[in-house]
Length: 408
Ligand code: SF4
Image (cartoon, rainbow, N blue to C red):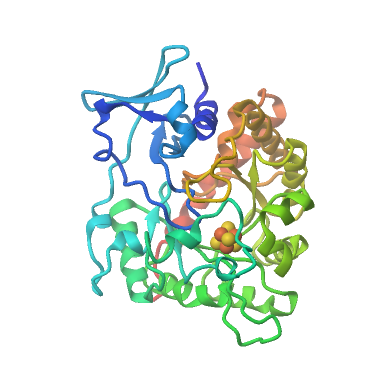
């Protein structure tokens, strides 16, 4: 029998088939191909203690058709059967929020503005990433943003529409975190006035802070050091969290699979920005994001340590060969290797004393650091670490209540 976190990793790596008993297409949240395409799975919740685990399980990618895991429905309950062992794991399928089917006041479907990924609202704020526009084919090889923006979601999002959707997500879905991301938009490195990702996010951050409240995160390709004051401006506008997707630790893998990032900003820019913002916001309030399952796991482990040493927490995404990406035929990762990576991640965070799982934000696209506790042998050190995080969670409650209040 798998532990909940082991089942989560198995499902990310092997995907899941959906039995006809589930009336596929009618259950749960719609499968959305927004942002970089990672949310292309079915959102499920795996019962776990001290908190449930949200997972966006691959169901449409080719490898999922061969998965040993089968989602079944009996009465009103759902279970995932491991057909290799016959073991049944009970899960729940969160209902699609009613607001997904409503329009904003400008007549735009709300689901084309933002979607829930776990219990937070994810919004890709801008037009297509410039790496997709380049004749040089600079897009990251695992990404499908260039195919989604303008088709599955609005390419230009009005600030008013974003406020309406963030309010609906807050009031009807209990979302307390709005996450904005963009691709690369720095049109002219020598022109300080040219529009780039960070500056595009600022009006949205300011508006959500003022009219909606909650925590706000921003993810964008790093700006040059001379523009680091723009991180300060975004913090002033209300940003609580920055994330930096440098994707691969191995420089050759980074250059080959993220040619745009390698040629325009370079790997080290991600760390400079991570260190700068971690100093401004505090340890654990910035994250470095990498993809596991493509480069050797020793490189991924080095990446985890490097992110932790920069004062950030590691967000490790299990590689998903999304349909339409250049890597759609690359095999999905081995679950045993991924278990090793996430056990290492837990130990790395614990050794650094990084606070994890303090806020009640559930991210369905990744294995969250606090979920990895079940992968390591309990010891005095792990228990002390859990106690510290539990204490921080209790102490954070008044702060969370205060952050929910709009600044207007
Ligand atoms: S930076 Fe890479 S991953 Fe992000 S949107 Fe552009 S091509 Fe996709």
